Length: 280
Image (cartoon, rainbow, N blue to C red; front, top):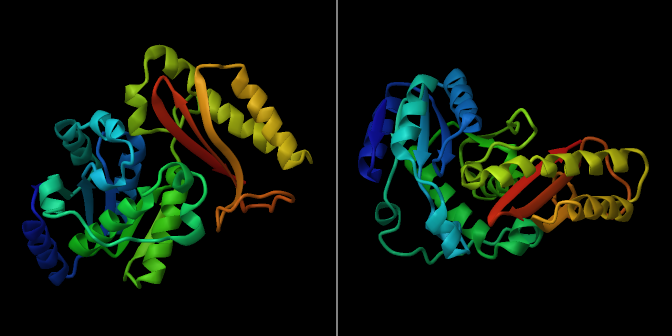
């Protein structure tokens, strides 16, 4: 497994591999890897000649400096996990390598960044769009793999690839969960034991909402039930809970559409911000 730290050496190595006829599957990450990330790497390796993983905590997508400071950084452990998964190349640049100067470009994703994550994290998707487009230009993969836990991020990246005519395919992959239902996330490592025991209530709230809507309840009635659920666990600070259209992510106010309804949640627990979603 090659571990590369500069853009130039990464481009040179991968260009030679592609010249030799090899295809590249790419998994961009911010490190602190877990089984969900590893499943993306394994799929990338199964569907391509080379599996490439980037590990870079991107400062431009954090609107909260304290969140950036506390984000876990575990490069050595990450590489130990990637090797048996079949990863061929790790691109692990510094912030200075990726941003010799701060980007002046601003990306606007329209309504996709006015709801949910975009509403509560101003500038977040501009940062995501810039770093992912830079990574696509450096790695030049045929396929890129993203977990659907970050549903809105996947929608933003798909829009960017379509609008800017990137020559690659985006492969959304299912959310992996712990045995108690908690969505796997790098942020879970920051939960105290007490908070970790409560965290599965997020998934329970999503399933409660799904059951309410499928039984004919209105969106308002569903929201009331969810609010009552979280009120039973005052350790949670609910930021949003939305029923949205899977394609546009705009709020659903009336009839749900089978197979295209997304329930999305963000909540703070013990100072850690957790997100999750289900689509049905």
